[in-house]
Amino acid sequence: METNARLTRLASCAGCGAKVGAGTLASLLGDFRTRTDPKLIVGFDKSDDASVYVVNDETALIQTVDFFPPIVDDPYLFGQIAAANAISDVYAMGGEPKLALNVMCVTEAMEEAWIREILRGGYDKAYEAGVIISGGHTIRGSEPLYGLAVTGFARPDQIRRNDAARPGDALILTKPLGVGILATAAKAELAGASLMDKIYRQMATLNRDASRAMQRYRVHGCTDVTGFGLMGHGCEMAQGSGCTLHIQVGKVPFHPEALEMADMGLVPAGAYRNRDFAEGSTRIRGSVSRAMQDILYDPQTSGGLLIAVDERDADALRKEIPGAAIIGYVTEREEWSIVLEA
Amino acid sequence: MERTIDCMGMACPLPVINAKKAIEAFTEDGTLYIKVDNETAVQNLTRLGEHNGFVVSSTRDGEKAFTVTMAVVAGVAKAAAVPAGALSCQTPAGGKVVVLSADTMGTGDEKLGKKLMKAFIFALTSQDEIPAKVICYNTGARLTTVDADTVRDLKILEAAGTTVMTCGTCLDFYGLKEQLQVGIISNMYDIVEAQMTAALVIRP
Picture 1 (cartoon, rainbow over the protein chains, first blue to last red):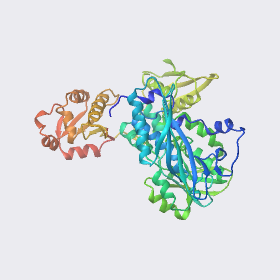
Picture 2: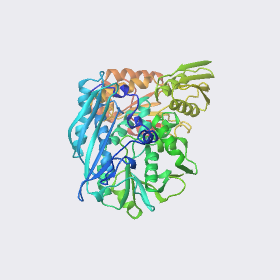
Picture 3: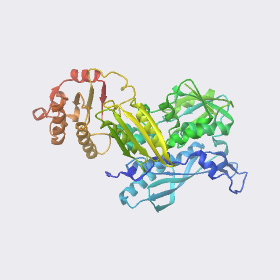
């Protein structure tokens, strides 16, 4: 349908750029009383994409929730992107998503038709992923928000945590970076419609095929690259795994248009937060331009998977995932979490 | 000249957009002061100024109050939305060439696509730099013949110096040859040459 919705005008941040920084979160949740359970193999303490509870030898339960303000004006596209982004956390754990609940906030300024289109986008994307939306919760508020709480399942041995990369692994990234910067440029009406069409389609693409391909190879660690950017999520992988990630900057896939936009100062606030979080644990070997660094720190909405795979399988796995690239390798822990190699 | 713009309470990218417009309005060298309330804006404005080659400094006036100062050199403001690399090159003789390969813009609903194409051509007429050539082919041939809105805007571009070219084969195919309202009838040789020698080919 044709709408004149300008959803992004109703939002103060774009997509995953709205995420509270990793450092802030850790201090917010630092010292609460919580119960422990050995069956909860991935909880908050792990900084992973989703929590994982082992039900029995055959089944692990994966739970995650994700929602954000509109990153695109078209309500149907926004719904699809928000759903793909939320479901992605299950794929990043190596699971199959099965059930979901809508999480939604609507404002007075939103027409009923827009709200319906957002939900239609969410339902269509859930359908594509084989997910049943079994309910949800919608409130009124000052800013539009949409996302899903998603439940998935996997055999316990199929779980791929973000803290299990091993020295000798190769690193694969499955979607190009720069979408946060380009979404900011689009808000400034400085990014063309055909470029943004491509960007939104990328955001609405499920990580399902990448996740399923991963099960056929010796993959040790995996995470999806979202609000904390490649550097933030990479840092978490390195620290959790007790390794160092070496990222070969020249091999990282990104949208070249984002370089120019970053140079013009169209960098989302989240990229600066991510830099604050990860820069102190990063060493740059050689020279990496400021704009390229912004792309590495850029918060991604519905970004790709960052996969640590046995080096012998890397090429075969990369070939199974369209658009994926081998971007570096993992070593024993060195002084830094991430080494950027120019 | 001196100018101060107040971007307090504005989240990015608004301060950058406002500063960019202010810079473009400088007719002589001078100083631009931008008041903002967040550090992201300070950093992004610094990037914008340095991107244009200006000397930039910033001060903190309060807990949530900053002033970014740019020594603006008039007439050097860089264009936006040009692919990286194009800026550093000398503009080749061919200039910017806009290719309209259909009477719609983007893929999707046809009615929307037509509306977008009209808006695109209208917006072209209000740019600081107009394209050297506009090439219309396939259903793009309708834009120079039967579509009154786009004919009007393309005439504005033509009057300002743009060469508007429509593919002759396409006019024949759609039976529009007698209805050409603006520009010249062209052939594949010229269409190829215009694109091969262009500094930049723009396809909406």
